[in-house]
Length: 363
Image (cartoon, rainbow, N blue to C red; front, side, top):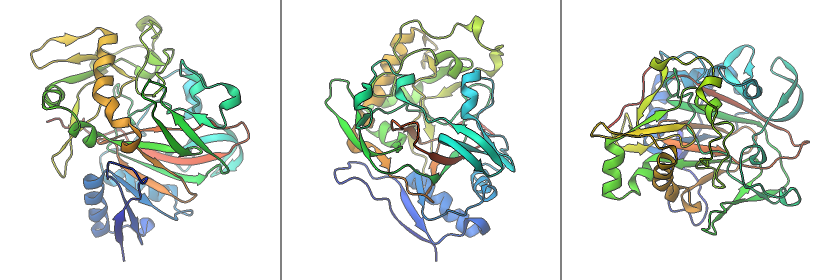
């Protein structure tokens, strides 16, 4: 019989989100069981399913799709730089399910001789941990929402499944922002924070600002921001004029530029989450019709709103075991990969999210 229990958090955790669901047959999911899963997801934002080593990509896709039956395509397209294409690799029989990870893999689900790439802070951050300390220390990569943020609507949910997990050591995530904060993490952790908690931590004045403002994202935002360097916390980008100029981006259709609420409404509880992608935002539209378009000011505003919620006591850092699958509310959670992997570390994950059939609902 299906059972739900609270997700285990670190001993000093100050936030309680996420549940574990046991005894569920995702290959033959009934409407009644899905209703329980949906209610649990939108009340707790994250669900962990254990011991699913044989779950088919088809079942993973179908679970993801049930949250948005009109959706079909993977949540990102390939209108991005050639360098980014290495992160897009679909299962041949179910291309909406993408293979993520690290290392060389001889054969996996119909793919052969594939090279997987785990993001490394050395390639994106300005402050890099020295090579001789990279086994012991690491950084959050980039806190983000799974979304293209140009043309395609943000997916409602993401499923992420661990097939092969590197073992053998733990790492300390360094914030290096003057706070002295750090986080213990297993190798190749995924870290999650609740956007609802992020909103609730704000002052009444800041909550009103978030409720009444909108975020405008850059065209082809991940091409645009790729040359810029990431803050040590993974939560912002330094404003140094390194963003790719529009003349060098793929063709831009102004109608596909996204202007989204900063607060996204939960479809079950009605509660608000602060959901802003800190790397991709370009402008803030205010209630009175004015626009903050100074890029450094935009980033500083968002950083101040979001930074309190990534302190260690508010982060859920999932210690992956093979066969784990996490389902999370992509309209109520920010997340990031963590970990500095060696060339011979092997990590294989399956990820599925589908471009939304409608934009997120605001306040």
